[in-house]
Image (cartoon, rainbow, N blue to C red; front, side):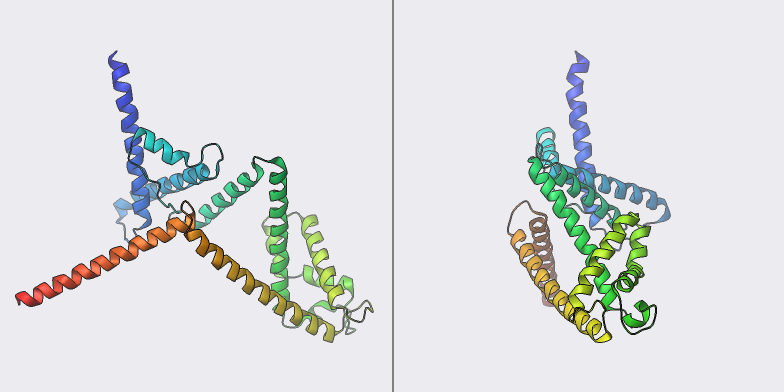
Length: 284
């Protein structure tokens, strides 16, 4: 009987302790510029790991269909009041946080309630990934100081399709992707498709080779088009972010609210400081 009466208190105490750790994780995010003494560094590292735990846990609940914001609802049920806080990875662990976000986003796409939508989302993800690789290759190509001398292996003043494919395959981006673990066959296929597309778009006289004039003119045209496209995409991203700020529950809205709160707090502190200075002057 005594054990049955004691158990609910233990559960409540456990949740209260968990809520304290959650709030401390949020406060840790704002401890910028703090210098920890040697005996405090171990505790600071432990707090950072707890923050990463809550960041990952909250992110998982945010993307699940069946228990969206389940972490917030659980805290509300066991130890109210509670409000979800905009957690971010601890300083120095941003890369790990980005990996966690990527894994969670990919899992969300794969676990779509509608299988057809899930396959479509994964196909879009693969297409976007391939497009980003092609864009990286194109940017490196634009920055090559002298493409003809680098790609023209027989030095006859023209580039064949094979020379162009081989030349793009020597760009640093290929080694970078190979070191990242991309299968060689997949990478070779992307390089060949990109090189072929560029080659035939620049071969204006359709003689099967590229002259130096065709290369310069073609790359300049592609570079201008790419710059325009990036500008349009940046504008769309900015507008989408501004729109997301107005939608409660989105990360952009939470960040906007937190920023508004910080600006309001700074304004109040400045006002209080000014009033204090005026009071000191009057007393003097």
